[in-house]
Amino acid sequence: MSIQRKIKNGRKRRALHVRSRLRNDSTHPRVTVFRSLRYIYAQIIDDVQHKTLVSCSSLVLDVKGSKTDIAKSVGKELAKLALEQGVKQVSFDRGRFLYHGRVKALAEGAREGGLQF
Image (cartoon, rainbow, N blue to C red):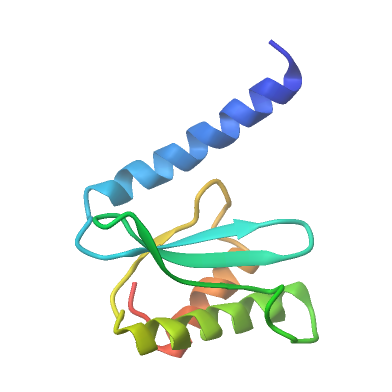
């Protein structure tokens, strides 16, 4: 097995491990996060209807500052858009990423914006 395949399988395994704990709590939509080296993306997904309710990313926002500050502003914008759609209570799905740094800043920004985890 190649090293790339091992890395890819490890990422899938970590993401499924986190997501499996959230599947049992399907009463609330979930906030999923993807973090690349340059940008951060977040969306709110309703697993019952299999639809994306709200999405936001650092590509859309024109915010200057560090990557952590940008992630926090993405979280605030996501919360604002979610509250307009009537979504207040969500579950946080960090995927394969550690709850640290930019992922944590996005979650804190969403909480400041009014979302409840």
